[in-house]
Image (cartoon, rainbow, N blue to C red; front, side, top):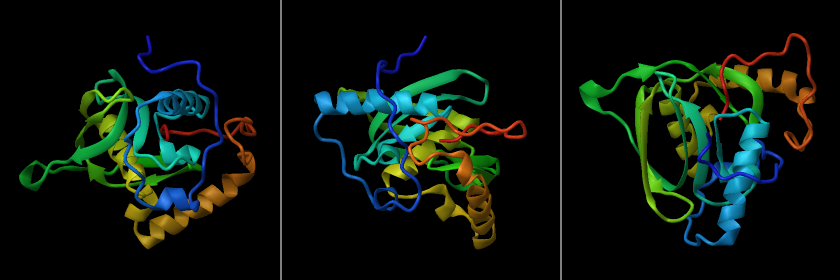
Length: 201
């Protein structure tokens, strides 16, 4: 059973290249009705796009908030809302990198290897201003890092070498006709050979 807000409306997902995707977003200071509506809409949009996480700037809103619904390394489903996230990552001898595939709903359909620490811990507050802490390994660790990056104006392509970034953009360009400009409000064009090995965030 989901603990995330329901009854939101699906919004178009903002793509890489839009200014709001590439700058530090504003901290959340108002926890009123507008934020509650935004969070519910983000959850609906994430679910419509079949993603595991979504940040506010991915629906064009300049705020440091993300939602997620993602399994950890053991397959346990973890969900939450984080405003003003602060990430903590292992350092020194505790730091181990996971070179798994990564994708982004704001560059739909394209995936590539992206090395990230295999554990992450995020602190912040939820949409009601209550303190929250989430931590995990596997895909959850990647998701928490990916979404916190979004709130800071970083897309995962920024973390890639030039060669891998070029390959990622080429794949996204090939797939672009499958994704309408207002996706996922309008569904993607389905092909029999289309598949995604890794959930996107």
